[in-house]
Amino acid sequence: MTFTELIKDKNIVKGEILESEALIVAQKVLCNMGLDFIPPSYANFLKYCNGIKYNGVYLLGATVDDDLDIIDKNEQMDKPENSILLGYNEFDLLCYDFKSKQYKIIDRSDFEVMDTYEENEIDDALSAIFAVQ
Image (tube, rainbow, N blue to C red):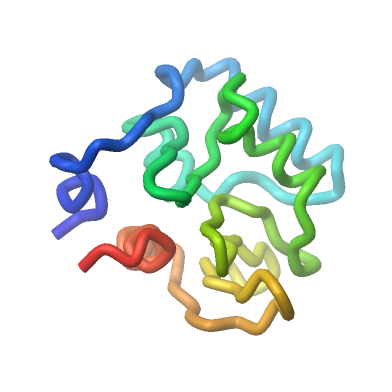
């Protein structure tokens, strides 16, 4: 079951519809910040859902919503080196390590890697940060 199927009946708040120009701008700004591009699998997810807020879990997007803005959160929040912050909850971060090309669930307090997922395992990584079964 895909992540989008798992959350379809939940009362989530989504960011606005993704504009391709907003994604391009976000990609450029992240690169100018010394980061890398948003991974293709996550960019595809943003076409369906450009950021999510649900029960203290946030998935970031190319959006003007301050809670969900991928650029703002990558500037403001601590994260491991070589990573783009894609989401977070009270305890963990969802990052994409652009050196290893993996999604990682990382403890917010000490940056210990809790789980890793290959890029094609995005549904598992998104489900893990949401802790949905």
